[in-house]
Image (cartoon, rainbow, N blue to C red; front, side):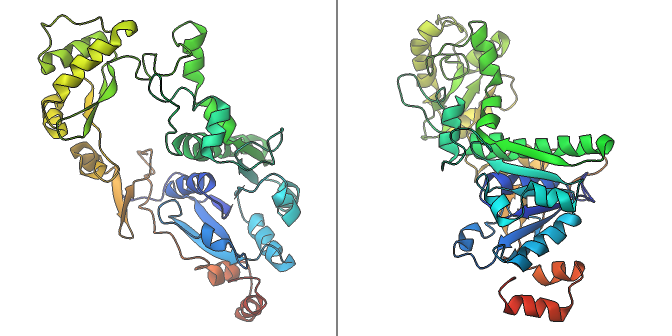
Amino acid sequence: MTGVGPLAGLRVIEIASLAPAPFGCMILADLGAEVIRVERAGDAGAGLLAPSGVLDRGRSSIAVDLKTAEGREIVLKLVETADVFVEGFRPGVAERIGVGPDECLARNPRLIYGRMTGWGQDGPLAQRAGHDINYIAIAGALDPIGQAGERPMPPMNLLGDFGGGGLMLVMGILAALHERTTSNRGQVVDTSMVEGAALLTAFMHGMHAVGLWDEGRGENMLDTGGAFYDTYECADGRHVAVGCVEPHFYAEMLGLLGLADEELPGQYDLDESAPLRKRLADVFATRTRDEWAEVFADSDACVSPVLSPWEAHNHPHNQARETFVDVGGIRQPAPAPRFSRTPAPTPAPAPGVGADTDDILGRLGHSPADIAQLRTAGVVE
C-alpha cells in the first residue's frame, strides 16, 4: 500500500480518549491526515488511555498536563495550526479545562471542533455515564438483535462506538470541512452515539412503516426470522452464513444442498420458517464449514463461511484485496475505502505515550531549554 492519502495536508489535534473518537481519528490518519494525539501527562488514569495498538496507529504523540496553564497554552498553540480538533470528554469538561469550542475557535476561527459523546451535549442523560450497550439500547438499535424468544444480544461494541460513533464523527468532520471551503469558517460537530446508532436503524423504520417489519425480535426477514437469512452449524461446530434473499439465489442454494426436488415450506412464509430451518440445519450439519465453503465457492447462493477475526486474513478474497495488513507486528484491517489517485499510505504503528513531545514542541517554537523546563515542571512528559 503506497501513497499519501486524500487527506494529506490536513492537521488534526486529538485529545486522548477511549474507543469511538480514537477510531474516528484512526480513519482520518489512515486517509493521510496528520493526527497529533495529546496524552494527559500527570493524570493518574492516563495509563488507561495509552495507545492500544490498532486504533491509535498513524499518530504522533505529545504528553501534556492540561490541568496547568502552560499545558493548556501548548494545546491552544497546536489548535492555531490545525484544521480539526477532536475531544471525547463528558459535556462541559473541555470548557472547564479551557479547551472548549469558544477558546479554540477564538484562536482559529476556521477550526472544525469535533465532539464525541454517548448521549450528546445536552438532554436529560447528557451527564450520565454509559457505554455502547446503553447508547444502542436507548437508540432502538439493540432490541431487534437476537433470536425469537430470547433476550437482545449486543453486537459487541460495533454499533455504538464504531458505527454510530467514530464513523459518524468522521462523516461530520468531513462535511464541515467541505462547508468551510465556501464559508471559510469553522464550526462544532456534536456527535452522539445514540443519534448515530439511531440513524443506522433507518431501514428498519422504513420497513416497519409499510408493514414489512414486525416488532417481534427474530420474526422478520433479515433478523433470522427467515430461514434463508441465518447461520447454520456445520459438522465441525463451525458455521456458515446464509443470505439468499432473492428467489433465484435461494433456488441455487437448495440445488447445491440437494434439496431442489424436495417439498419444503415457502421461502417467505415466516410462519413456517421453523421446519424449513430445521431441514436446512440437518443438511448443513453433514459437512464441515470448509467443505461447504468449497461447495458454494463459485455460486451465487449467498452462502459464506463464518470466519473469526483471526481467520479472515487467510480468505483468498481478503488476500487478493489486501484487506488486512501487518503493522508493527500486528495483523489488522487495512485502511478503507480505496482511492484511485490518492491511495492511503500503509499505517505507522501506534506511538509510545509522549514519544513526539520534544519534536512537536520544537515545531511550536520552543527551544531545548524551554522544553527541559516544561518537563521539569511536569507540564509535559
